[in-house]
Image (cartoon, rainbow, N blue to C red; front, top):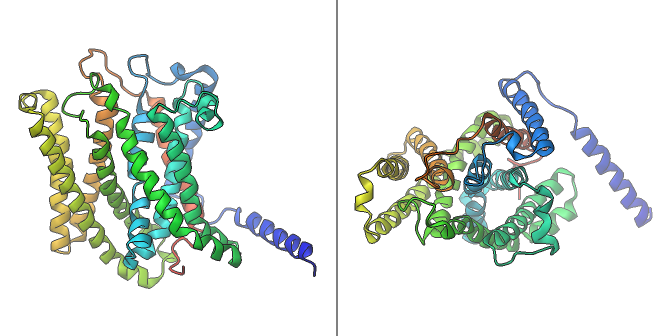
Length: 399
């Protein structure tokens, strides 16, 4: 058989295999499907009106508050929650800690999908979404803007994350030569991905450096980029604990027994890393507070709100992580992970929405349409994640 015939035969096999894999599997009438399908359909209708009649038809955005829930949660918060991918790949492939090898594939998949969906949500917020390509095609680059850098970091990181996950796709398609080739690229793409993550996680914080008069002094700092980066580390670790716990229940039939047994030890390791990072973050926040002499701001409504965030959702879960790790308590660790995630959501929404122009009488509140579209993005990501893990060897321990 000639090389041309062999390639044609292999292409035909892969094509028919993918067509077969696209067929639905499992029962349709599940609690998640019943809840998510109406949300997704309603969200699509809302997006039609958004793109047909403009942002004003479905959002409460204004000239004073141009960034709302879609930017504050979908992008700024969502990217922080996806930080587990760069943290775990760095630990496994650069630091060579094989203990976490079994969760790499699922974590990278989560990170890649999060960037695709949450980064894609930028299009919802742009008044002229067709201008989204300007930073890439050279039509008014705007290279002096932080957003220009973030756009490029997002795009390059998605490419890096896809290459990191591509050996799983090649294994699924039974393309052994391609899998070996792509696997050899892993270390280089991991290093690139970690570098890009450091830049855009901190870059999202840098967006607010130029908004000093508009952000409440308790939340504004020249070190906001550093705080955003450090907090993305424990946000990613906490997300892995929560998502890993759910995945081990929802997809238990796909996970090897030995990986079930080692998952608890992995959680304890993640908890230790989260505790250390959270304590570092808290000490950094405390030092900045003392250095800036902001004592007079504490005895105000916004000061009390600041203490709720820093003590209730940073210091307390940090102690809970440490306690859970020391006393081998999985339940306490899982509660701490949920609190830490809520703290990240609260911090990002505080900086981008809640305390942004805090002095104005007229406040921004997201419309119900904005909330539904955000829920649609989350549900769609879960749908695609579920589709992938039910077909590809995501939970396989072979590498």
